[in-house]
Length: 226
Ligand SMILES: [Zn+2]
Image (cartoon, rainbow, N blue to C red; front, side, top):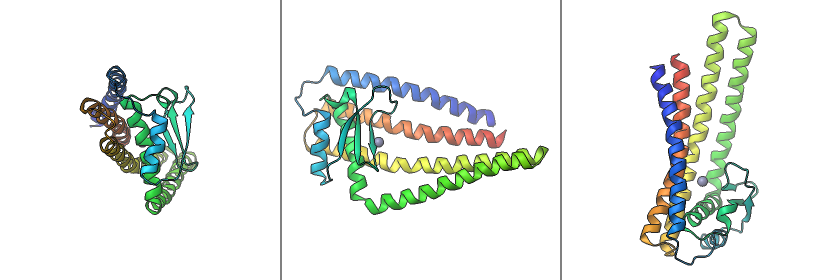
């Protein structure tokens, strides 16, 4: 059974690389069929935020070396866009920009809810760190078989808690994508073909979050069953 979950984890890693390749292909296609004249991705963010009555967020270009290049930084109220997307007007750049602006709008319009979720997550991550300390402590203080069991128990508990912490992201990701697609449709920012590409691209981004969680669960179950 442990082998099964290990295979699932490996399968998801392969699935993840397929998603990356597909995203690159979708971006290429979006740029090839780009004939509409739209404002650039960074300008769209400003219009989107105005539409959702969200106070102005600072928009910056991400350094090329950073892995996750499109991010909304909650505490700084800042959106960082991939340097390649920043001035582009293809539908992928536009949809990613709207997605990040969707995070800002969600944060502003559901302030109380997001604050509560964040506090609970802080507590959960503190507990998971304590679990890890428990693992290390029992490994040092206990002997033989008992040390192994307690150590493993602590690690699995910490891992499960961190997975729960990750799962909360799904709500925010789903909501940001929903707002982005709604905005593109409402403002007629894409042709039918382009809209399909935007949907495909954002869905693949969302799937990477799901695959990260499934990998964590599979790894935890592998450890548990070994
Ligand atoms: Zn996102």
